[in-house]
Length: 171
Image 1 (cartoon, rainbow, N blue to C red):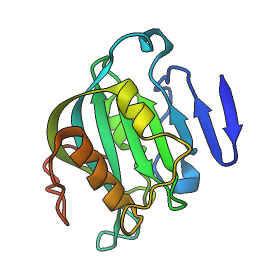
Image 2 (tube, rainbow, N blue to C red):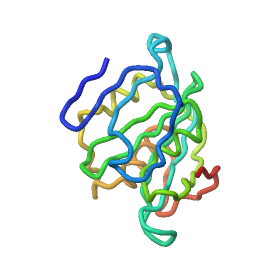
Image 3 (tube, rainbow, N blue to C red):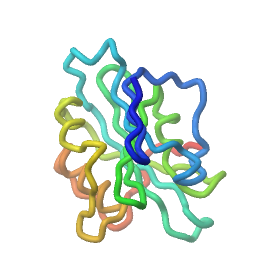
């Protein structure tokens, strides 16, 4: 079932990884909010691991766009990020690399990840807390503060001004 609500598309179908976005920019990746596989909806799927993804917006020296990448207990991965219009986009993928590549930024730039460790939060609780209809303007209203808020919510860790970039990289 798909509903079109203004600029948001809400998809409740299981995502297959038959293709992956190159993360070129916000318009290069559809603005969607996806849920987990239909067969897992009634199960207690948990968020078990958290990364922050970064992709350059302009060259190697410029600012970065930040996303939060989540590993679920059912084996799926989620890339959740704040759009420039304050809405949240969420993509469900079947691998860490495919989820990381959903991070918006300059076409052809790698996604660098920072590991923030394990957590144990119900996907349904998290999904209902950070809904697709909500606007997020934490303090300055940017993707960095949104990512910081999610990491703090999920495992009570603080993301600094510059994430550690101690995780895998994906092209």
